[in-house]
Length: 215
Image: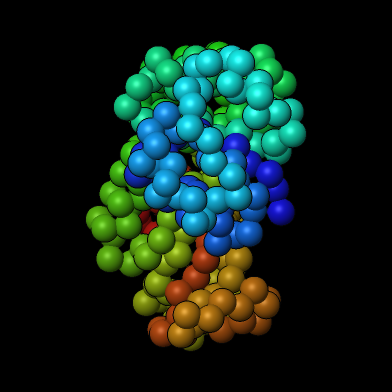
């Protein structure tokens, strides 16, 4: 369980608060809008109404006591940038800030953000890959080069074992797990035989995944 400061309770911030609550973390929520604060009282540990660009207000929250500080401000980049900078100046251990454009990401990283969330771009890439390929069921970007995909078993692999396909040597990618009837098995060996009713969770360089599965 982690102690998390969440600043900004628009739609994105509200979703983060909800997910953190489900995961059992302690969340201090901050927003200048009283209505937004009232909306999350049932799913956060504590909440404060206040302006995150006010250094005295932020300092009163005990920034150093939080494991993670998330800046989820979406419609006011100036406030997001100032908040990010102040959090770092006040000793925040880890600052994660939201960006809506590439240029914002650059400024946030230069002004105190340890990591940047780019939800619109990340979801757009996921949707483009997921819905432009009938055989790709999910996509998780790990970094600029590597990803995990959930993919149906290619027709010419059905009935063969992973050892026979020799996927690691031929394509430089790894089958991490097999999914069947919504159940995931990580007990994957060279003797595992692939069937038509299964999907695979595959890890590798995105270029290798593209080449192997024709994404």
